[in-house]
Structures are given as C-alpha cells and as structure tokens.
Image (tube, rainbow, N blue to C red; front, side):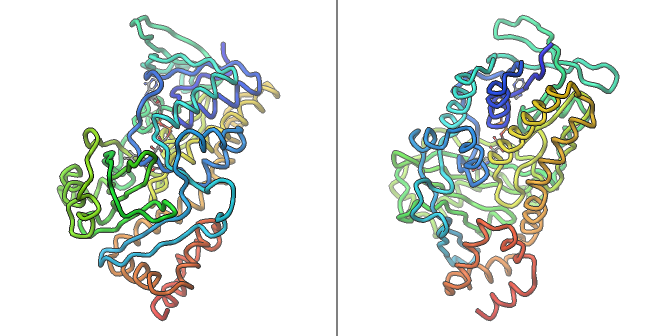
Length: 406
Ligand SMILES: Cc1cc2nc3c(=O)[nH]c(=O)nc-3n(C[C@H](O)[C@H](O)[C@H](O)COP(=O)(O)OP(=O)(O)OC[C@H]3O[C@@H](n4cnc5c(N)ncnc54)[C@H](O)[C@@H]3O)c2cc1C
C-alpha cells in the first residue's frame, strides 16, 4: 500500500513525485513512455512554472539546459499591425520571467530531478484501469514493458496522465466537449529569421486562424517552434485541416520572407488541449487529477505547463498533510481542489472571456493596432502580464474606450 500512485510523469506528475519524495512519503509513479520523450507542445513556459521551478531549486538547471529566455511577447493582429511588449518588470533580472525549452529536455530534467530526490518512477508502465471499491478508487492496474500485468494499491491515485487521461475517463470525466477543447499542431524549423533581439515569443492573429492563433517561438541553436491552435467547435464549423492551415500561414505574405531560408525539421504533429474554461472536478474518494487530466490549460494562451506544475505541487502538499493527519477522506483531499482553484480560477475565467473576445477581428485590430502606435497602451498591456488586477481591466469597457481614443 503506497501513500500515492501517480499516473504520468509529465510536468504535473514529476512535480508531485519530486515533492512527495522530498517529504519522505511512499509513492509509485508510472509512465507508459521512457524518458527522454517528446510531448507535442509550443515549449513555452511562463511565470507559474518559474515559481514552481524556483521552489524545487531547478531554475538554474532549466536556464543551463539550453533554454531561451522569453523577455517579452510580440502580437500581430488580423490587419497586420505588430506590437512588441517587453516584460518590463523583469528586464535586468538574472532569469527571464519565461523560457522556451524543448519538452523532450524540460520533461527529462523534471523526471531526473524527481528520481534524484528519491522518487520511484517506473517507465514503460501503461496504466490500464483503476481498482475500485464502489465509487472509491483504491489503486491501479498496469502493464509493464514486458507485458506483465500488475495491480497496486494506494491511499490516493493521482491522475497526471495528460489530455487523454485514462484516470479521468474511468471516473466518467473524459468526454471531449468541442467548446472547451482546442486542437493544435506544431512543427520545428531551423533558419527562421526576423526575431526580436530580446527573443520575444510571438502570437499572431491571422484571419485564417481565427478564432485561434499562429505562434513562432525562438529556441536555442537557431531553431523555432512553430504552430497554431483553434477551438475544436470552430474547426468543425470551418471544416479546417490544421496541418494544411499551418502550411498556408507559413507561406502567408506576412511571414513568407521569414521562412524563405528555413527548413522544417520533421513532420507537423498534432495533439489536444483540454482547456480550463470548464475545469473538471479535481478530487474525490481516493483520487486527484492534475494538469491536463484536470483540464487546466489556459483557454486564451494555451499554456498548460505552469498549471500542471502548480496542481502537481499542490496535490503533493495536500497528500503530505493527509498522511501526517492519517486522513485521506474525500473532505481532506478536497482541500487540494480548493487550493488549486484559488490560484488558477480567476485567471482561467478571465482567459475564457478573452478567448471569446478574440473571435472579434474588430477588437483584435483595435487593441493591437492602437498599442502598436501608443507606447502608453503598450506599457499598460505589459503590466497585465505580471498583475491579475491590471489584466482584469481587459474586461472593462473603459479599457476599450481608452484604446479607441489613444
Ligand atoms: C500543440 C500544443 C502546444 C502547446 N503549447 C504550450 C506552450 O507553449 N506552453 C504551455 O505551457 N503549454 C502548452 N501546451 C499544453 C501543455 O503541453 C500541457 O498543458 C502539458 O503538457 C500538461 O502537462 P501534464 O503533466 O498534465 O501532462 P503531459 O505532459 O501530457 O504528461 C502526461 C504523461 O502521462 C503519461 N501517460 C498517459 N497515459 C498514460 C497511461 N495510461 N499510463 C501511464 N502513463 C500515461 C504520458 O506518457 C505522459 O508522460 C500545448 C499543447 C499542445 C497540444
């Protein structure tokens, strides 16, 4: 009997495994992949993942692992206006407030750090089902790399198994709702030109990709992560094929010159993003869900690594408290959900509203166009990256009035 079994060793699962190992709890982590492994992603991490990395003492390791620091963001609107927004507060600091690092490297780093802290992680281990006692979850069934079947029990099973989580599905929460689900494709390129000198990440709202955006993120060694994502309901409505769309946008008159000498490295790959406009229940009798399994991806930006790490961290903190008090009741586990929602709920709600507003070509052109010409408005937007209260102003008509008159 373990204190916890964690299904999945991505950012959410590795963070939880790492912290539980440090706290001396007995935990088994199972991942069907062997690390290093790829995860289809934009590879860009923001402030929340930096906070958890700092708490795990891994900030320097990520910095030294070949990451590119993100010191700002460049937006362009459907009409082609471009605004460059530096993260002003961070300029001059030792570490950038965000970074881009291939998930193959980031996840291996998190995995290795968890193992070094004493976590027991079995790879090549596919979880095939939950062990139940009525509605309660008591453990998991899994198959090892040699095809042998196992059954293990724990006081709590943590589903950190990503967008297609078997744990969430077995709990009856795996249905994909196209209004709360984004599909995205990604490709690596080398030789893309025209990046901002401060290695800004770039989000481009192009007519063809609305409602959704096209991204270009600079990486180390002259590479770039390039992709686009769109709400599934819109993909159905438009009968869009994302891989073809990516090809079209790369050759779009606004970007073709930047890709003129570039070469795609490998195929275009797609994966799903369960977004947090409709987060799932995160805890119940004998179970917790973290990261994508809990549908915690930001509906506007598509960022999910930070929330996966925050929820993995909170899950481990809660499990440690439950162990100390010998109380793994549903009420005790529910503290994890409350604590995580306290950190992410406002941001997810706001991002859902922004996602809906970004369907309006008019609003995108208004804000990006005006910010491109008004340094004061650009500075306001820059402040919004650090400050939730500032960001809430995006919901106020006064902000758009100011943009109109800027
Ligand atoms: C195209 C695309 C671009 C994105 N861009 C960004 C971005 O730039 N920035 C950002 O922050 N987020 C981005 N995201 C979202 C981000 O990738 C996820 O939010 C993040 O990976 C979630 O981490 P996780 O630990 O919850 O799950 P994952 O990283 O998916 O890890 C889940 C783990 O569970 C394992 N697993 C799955 N099923 C089983 C099973 N049955 N048994 C055992 N193990 C299992 C898998 O092997 C995997 O290792 C993007 C997503 C996509 C699809």
